[in-house]
Length: 132
View 1 (cartoon, rainbow, N blue to C red):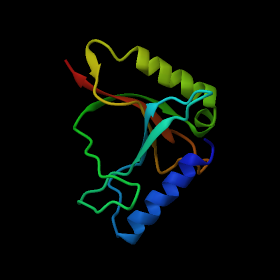
View 2: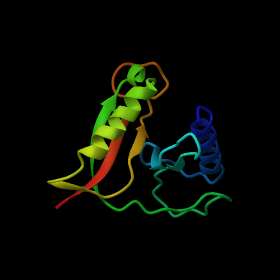
View 3: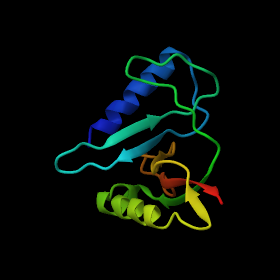
View 4: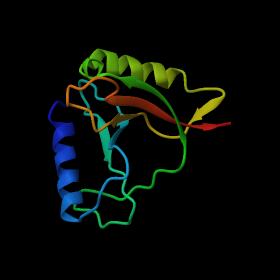
């Protein structure tokens, strides 16, 4: 999976550039299912844009309903630790109950500082939630 996310991101950015569609927020990766030894993960890379767009082949337009997010912020060093990332996903998945309920799949939000080596938060792992 080490090349999947950069490849998906490159394809999405190429299409957005070709269509002159600027982002209105950071890209995020929805984790629809986890990878196992016998099955690949089901991932959905999302790029928020302000105007309707025609998707490229193998891409789709998906609406992201309004929601709150319960999240954990990570530094670049933490974002490079795959075991920590899995543990954070597990923690958020296990604790999404009362007074909140899950409103979508876990996601990884890559902030503009991701991969720059800069200080501070570069990534967030989140669970979309709605108040009960």
